[in-house]
Image 1: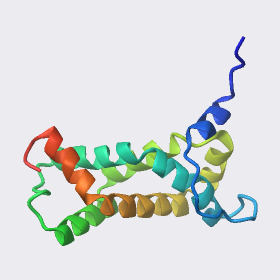
Image 2 (image 1 turned 90 degrees about the vertical axis):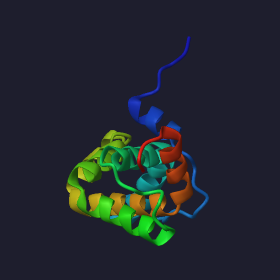
Image 3 (image 1 turned 45 degrees about the vertical axis):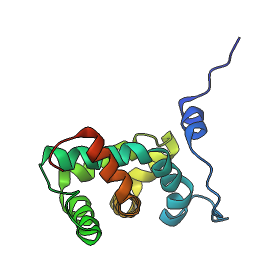
Image 4 (image 1 turned 135 degrees about the vertical axis):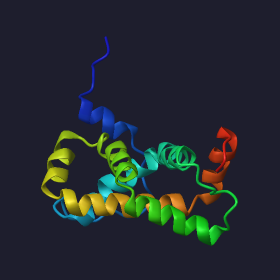
Length: 143
């Protein structure tokens, strides 16, 4: 007979282990939370993150692939910096994988953590422009 893990244990088991050293202090600061929670969840959700951005680019008929790398980089920064719908879709896809304790911490530091989520997501997408272009090419459309 299998024992069922709690939802929190199941969420934690999904996360990749990062090789970067973690802060040694308890999860009491937003910086610690970024290293212990946000980075692993963003890594886990990497493919989804790229797909969300690619879908947004296609839905808005943006000529993304035809742009040079500098323009693509700028476009990603603008999209994740200014578009409220896209921002909250990304935030929701990340915070949906928080444990109960992480949700509690998130609620106490929502503004700062949203900023960090979007900053990390922007960096992650910008560092994978080729993968984003591949998703757009595979999906077809005017991007």
